[in-house]
Image (cartoon, rainbow, N blue to C red; front, top):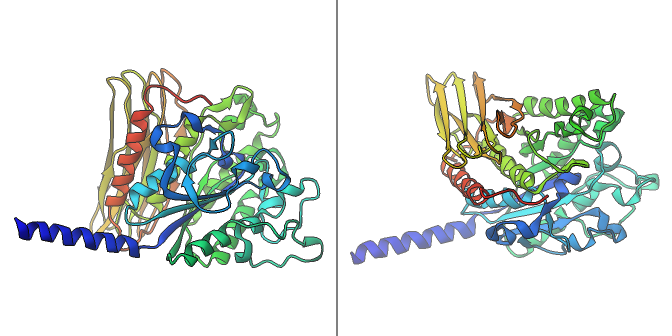
Length: 454
């Protein structure tokens, strides 16, 4: 018995030493107002009110002019929590929670910089001149990257806010000064609503490709995983949205471009937001509190699928995030993969309502050694059945497809979490994905009694 106790203690010490040696995983979150978020922080579950085990550095350029988000801007790393006097939040809260569960040996750190009403053409592109109409929204690429930005700013392109403490370069420097190894693990991007109302929509795909390429180049991470939030169909005038009638093709163009960029790049995925409730009846631009929690969960599920956490090298993944059934309803997800050399695994994260059922299934046709996986996370719905399914077919490293349809109270429907392809990462198995799905399912169970106020 004594020998056994000594062995257990030695194992625990080795785990602790291993955890210390692991690099801090830094996630960059950026975009416009739905990345800023309008979640009501005071209504979050207790365990999400503040997460000191996850480091968070937040900036909203609105603070440049002393606007309402000035108090939400941080000067250093702090706990992951809603920010500012209003205690608002976006997808970072549940995303960070899921990453901490998925990577227990690593410290998770999140740098978020987002500003409402911004676009890639005037505000987020590398090397842009200041926007003369809205100065505080200017040169956001540099505001995010700081000294990591390779562009030259002189003459008419001179920096409007040259002395501002930028986010990512200073955040990384602080970690490194404290002796931490750092891994820039991924970028989450929720943006595109701005372009959906004007002609920039029709070039959004090329502009987004250029932005992703610039970020990867300047960070020195050519394979940086990127997860995109596809803009919501709440924007359509037929759905009561704010985009003017006659501009439906603009919305179509942005949404199609986001999917196309993800489908053509094996290190990019997209997540669906079409089933998210608007914040208010007169504000279809933005989501309600429950939706921001779901968005973070979907970002997490898509990211884990993208980096191959649910499979082995050569994996193909299909990931879905499903709405939760109300009383007596059911929620679930299924994924299927046909791969010329694959085995399959499935993780379940669906939640049923009162008396309901939840589950996930995955199937594969295989002839050799690589893995395919399907995972799902449940959302919030009412009175009916909701589900999600993803399927993929690949003749090599990766392939997936995902679609979506709205789920109405009392009816049936589903929403896929992402459409992504991944070649997997050697040495990473299913444990991280399982831990994250367990954490997400626990959060959803605690939200069963009702939705937060938006």
